[in-house]
Image 1 (cartoon, helix red, strand yellow):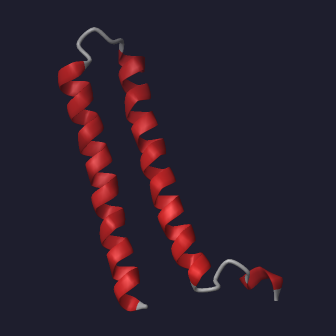
Image 2 (tube, rainbow, N blue to C red; image 1 turned 45 degrees about the horizontal axis):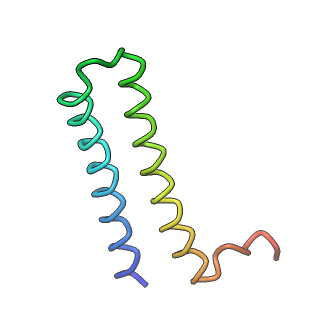
Length: 73
């Protein structure tokens, strides 16, 4: 159990850092003609995608261990 948890923590950090750095590089170099609010939307969309990927990863981990139904007891 600890190995799977540690792997997901590491993947969470790498995923958030990767999406944040990737979106900032994209905004910094490839959006010269965009307004500031369009650049902010690009970063927000990348953040939403990152959080969605992390949510799927953590929900599947919790579901396999029976942690999803703790409120039913």
